[in-house]
Length: 332
Image 1 (cartoon, one colour):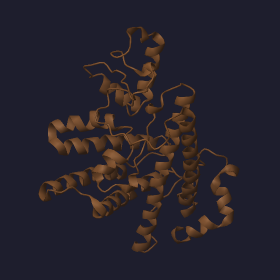
Image 2 (tube, rainbow, N blue to C red):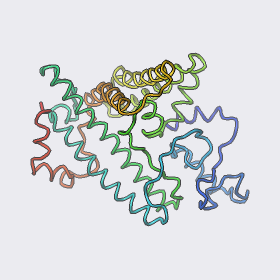
Image 3 (cartoon, one colour):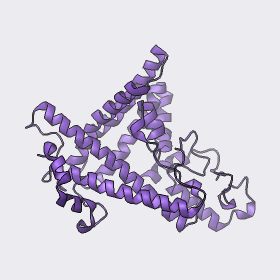
Image 4 (cartoon, rainbow, N blue to C red):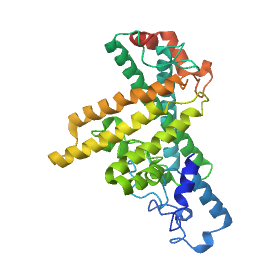
């Protein structure tokens, strides 16, 4: 679907895409046709560029993703081996936490949420306070699952790109910028959360609707396309989807960003600091209950991830009874 979205966007481009020099020490193979010799534009180079355009979601090393927010690099870049070692260590750590968190969500209701048939995170038989505290804890852990899954995939792709295809380290910058430190919704979505689909969301939703409704259309249009993408992904499980809940989460985050814009115009101050952190966490996690409920009902948490059961870290933790005892208040 991402390739389809890009095909629509790229069909309206007026200038060709070019590779750019990403770091002073970047090798000549990552220069574009303007800064490198024309002899470098071989059929092999063109084929590699075409493949990279399909897979390079953020546009790192290209001129087509303007105003892209790239988190600062925290891994060592003085040598490829050090960078690869740090990436591999992070991959294994995120794999561990992904499995543990996934197990915790499955343990909250093994016969419903933790099964392929699925089940909602809202239990109507529980008192309201218990019901929504339980759903919020499940939602929070689900957000961490998504974070770990993206990190894991990004690290794996980086290792393949660097070790197999000999890509430069600068083409694999960090994916996130500590999203849990966000002090506003604008900061969370524009800087700290991953920007993998930013260009497509803006090009297909934000820009067209901005011509009709200005800033409101730009913000809500971008989140609407995001809702369609996530709805499409959920339908790939084969159990259908719930577009109302998915769309509700993303559009309400757009509404929250517009509210921040109004706050700034009225008060002259940005949303920030500890109050901004509370606001951001409450708004994102609160509305994410809708999104996670849609996922849970369609069996998204009923799988076994990448590892056999005997090798899952959660299998060993289960015997210690630590995780099961922590999940007792949220089990049903």
